[in-house]
Length: 348
Image (cartoon, rainbow, N blue to C red):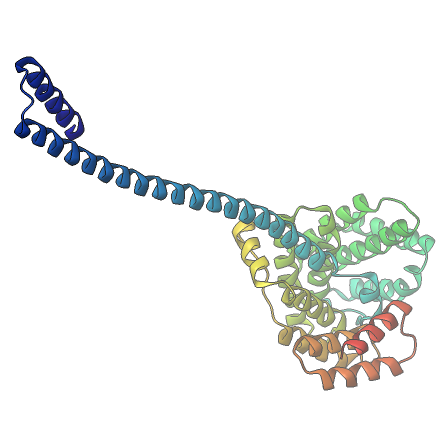
């Protein structure tokens, strides 16, 4: 507005000069003064505009950087979410494996409040199980017997976990033969769950429900896997409360703690944010369970290997080397385990 007003004043003055025909020194000096003031104002306004343009340019640059950074964050978060899900899936699906079930000690019968006739029958089933489970035909025979018994005396937890166990063994044979085992495993899980709900003081009902939780989580999404993982931990610990000397249960909970301990803090945070729950443990806790399992079954090669892995994670390398040497001397180490032993020794 100042610039327009000044220009108008100049024009009025020039018009007046032209009209009167008087171009005097005073008028000329005044016009020159006004022109100089106008130039000064223009210079100030140009300077202010330049400052505003510089500020706008800076804002645009910063906004561009923020957009680029946000884009990178979104990409990184998506990658982190994917990695987090993968970590949890690998952690939960690796528990349990058939080799763990096969090598752990398994007392004949831990059933409580069991009638003498049923107890004798259950002990007979356990005695035959180790032979029957070795072949598909044997599993089929054991499955037929237990299905008939379960139909005759339904809702008997002492029979239900044994039925779930032989169904699990048969599913593993089906998998080896290239047959889809999902249906059989999910049916076994349902029976084990009901048996656990009905059981009172039965460690194996809790243990086999946990085993089937772990084995069927490969069919679930990540949220269900996490829920099953927490339930797995709960059930194995309930089993150990009743039967603290079962090396299978001790090794299983040790494996669970070991796998969970390997999950990075930011992965756990993402999982907690996305799914509302996340398993937690430490390598020290895992080592405690593996050592207890070793006290009961010192010839278990895989258990000794995981003791070494825990010690390495805890940076107790000299102790880890001692355990690896001890494992190396044991007979019957599987080729896959032997390869792990060799790789771990190279890292020490």
